[in-house]
Image 1 (cartoon, helix red, strand yellow):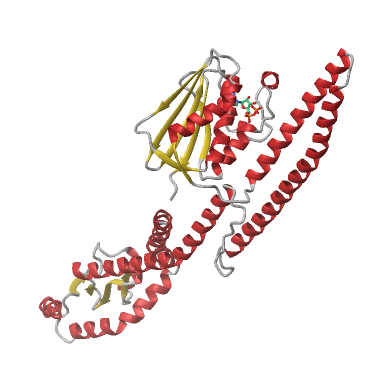
Image 2: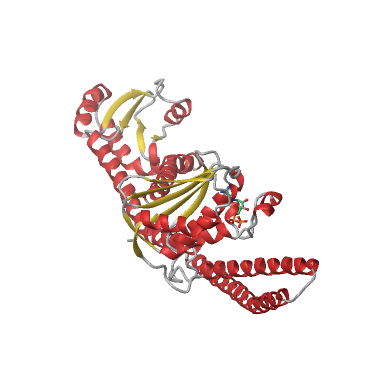
Length: 433
Ligand code: ADP
């Protein structure tokens, strides 16, 4: 907030100072004549009185009288001058010769000099000196106080705006992380009330759309499962009959397709459940090495080649950590299956716990993931280089499910290049509050 306050204040104070400095000069220049006549009228009485004093005595005594009046009029100066003195402008000399008073104006239209003619040659000047230092300082302190008051006003004005903007930002962040019921709760009377209202309406619409989409996906997936199971069952029965070898082969192919379809439906159901979880993630205190062990055990049979070496690096002291075992295992199993599919012969799992959370990474020495694809692979159904993936199977839902499983626990999942040469998937889970 202070950065925006500082910028706003800087803009205000600079424009205010520039205006104070330039605008009076401009106005005085444009209305110079009016300011001069006003000052002439204003000083006429005093100038007439001074001139009268001089005319009351012989001109030989004028210097002495000027010196005496100069003392009495301190800090103003009373000075005798010739009317053709080079100090006067041509215009001023002309006025003095005609017997007219002259005034000069300075900053803010204040008089700096007033001259009254005494006779054909002599004039008496009343010089207004600049303000003494202490008074100048007082004027400056007035400006500083005005500046401070402006700062206080800006702060007062900005605080509620800032609070509402922070709330809007927080809501947008939480909404983006999947908390679809988040709303700003900003009062309509706030200055950003209408913006917040638009945001809330948009959030409501998105929530409705996503819920509809999830419900549709759920319903379709559920509806698909029953006929799929029936088909699977029927084909299994048909296979048990005596069949010629070619028909048996064809039927076995069909069974494989149906199982694949069933797998896809199951994946879709998992994804749609994770997208809008019905229950809060669990928090179970697990021993991390045992947890990793059990996950490795669960994917062990899928290891295609016995040459693949899986290393586990447990950095630092082995600790326990609170996580949702079901969701985390789901994510890690997907990552390990992918690593097994795409590696050459090495997979490395690393675990590190720090006060802020737990980091687990899965490295492989495979072909890796191009930088520009490292975010897109987390989108559902997104698969890289189709020809490559068809051989390795998968629907492109595994990483989307893994990421959702971690985000549901407040964690993250990102893809990076691995020091082994392939891909690294970095899983981060924050320490529960
Ligand atoms: P799939 O089930 O098709 O593997 P995923 O969502 O798990 O879908 O992965 C999406 C895509 O990311 C995959 O098609 C694959 O191209 C790429 N990918 C995932 N893991 C790796 C990996 N370890 N190395 C290289 N590419 C990978």
